[in-house]
View 1: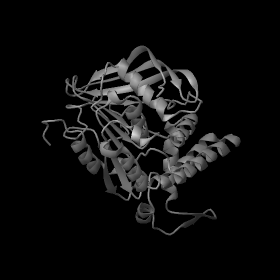
View 2 (view 1 turned 45 degrees about the vertical axis):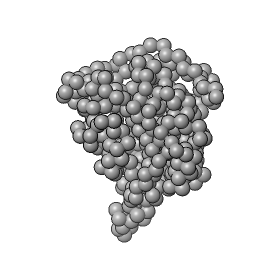
View 3 (view 1 turned 135 degrees about the vertical axis):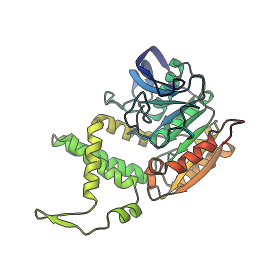
View 4 (view 1 turned 90 degrees about the vertical axis):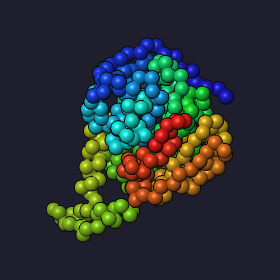
Length: 342
């Protein structure tokens, strides 16, 4: 198998501070790498990371969907809200007093890279980051959605770098129905660009996405109200929610970053039989983007290296962000070290 090569240029600490407990420092930094990308050739890239936790503790890399970033959860050192609040903290599976938690910004997340991005490129970037941080091996890679795709690629391309993969709501290939959803979302952005209103197109794309992330059951419970006629137009109950979701997304997301990372999901293809790392797959019944049947196929392809947990949740694909207690219980068992008590 031919792997892309990544050359680390230099490590740049951007900020460093101690959390409330001096044994659990938090540091942010960035590295420059030369990465040979699958579809875009040799590129100079900058990788941004955040590392939180007790020095010398086992390292867990946590990666989320295409909207996620290096800041997983608020700490005393970096107090702003992270993308996975509720999954990190004292007494949880991802406890910075007992684990070092590594997060990174996906390649392309800053919107500067206008080229196709493969999940294999992300995995090679992770390997380069681990080299720069002198981390020989991860105790675990916890990947949600797009992060799970990157984790599968890391387990194939750099298997010695991790002991265990937990892949939540991410399969070995995109489902054609989900790819169709994303294609229409990208067309919404393109339409906005033609009208010189690309942020409006991005907001509309995000609103379409919210319908695919969640379930009809949730919308039935939350928005079962009669429509209103406002200024001669009919407005349904869910529109305020969708408008807010679009506005929030536009405020923090570069248009090009969204387009290239959305494409990256659809480019993703791996052979489950090539994964040589113990892998726990977590599926959500009712997830319309990553159906249970696809994750069953993934586990079957993994053979003895794979196991499956299934959640039932009205939150669909977003269950990993909403069902934090249940996800934490799964992670607690999956990441328990020999001799470690519950």
